[in-house]
Length: 231
Image 1: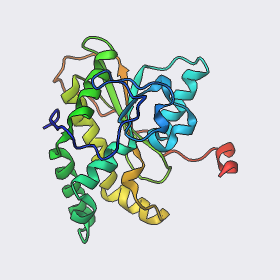
Image 2 (image 1 turned 90 degrees about the horizontal axis):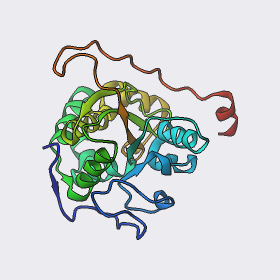
Image 3 (image 1 turned 90 degrees about the vertical axis):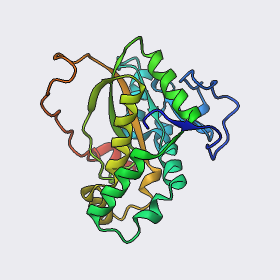
Image 4 (image 1 turned 135 degrees about the vertical axis):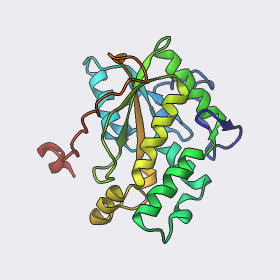
């Protein structure tokens, strides 16, 4: 279920600097500690890329430099890595065809119970964006070659609807296209490098439930000259 969770399932200890469950925010510096599940954009720096992904890290730096950015938060890469470990996802996918792997991953991720503290933190983070806030959801990969869709999903409202989109982003890591790209680029342990960015969004122009045209899919990011020279 989208909003279900079991206490005591986190495999990593919380930092002593973490906020209490349900507040949704993390104090500055907490990103560099284990056990951080969700972090507010305003606390993110470029040095946090491994945990929050490149997209969120860039937005965090923009905020730091005074550029206006829609408020939001990140479900960190640790959350998917821990889910994959709990559900033994790599073992379940072993030997499956690309199409079978995509279906298995979507089913496992869609049905997996989430830790209660993670569920509480996301609910608190959404509440902090404002009463009945609409949000958009998108992948924030740590690397360029994970192959995940860069489509911006939403807008949706409420924790359960947000979790549905987060799970959809997680599952996109195992589409045949994503797997083929990683095989071509020699990328391993992909489940350790995918965070999910959630930001406040404008309410839809048409009534909820009305059919809307598909949102434009963002192009796969290529390194710019400055980044290419630094790697």
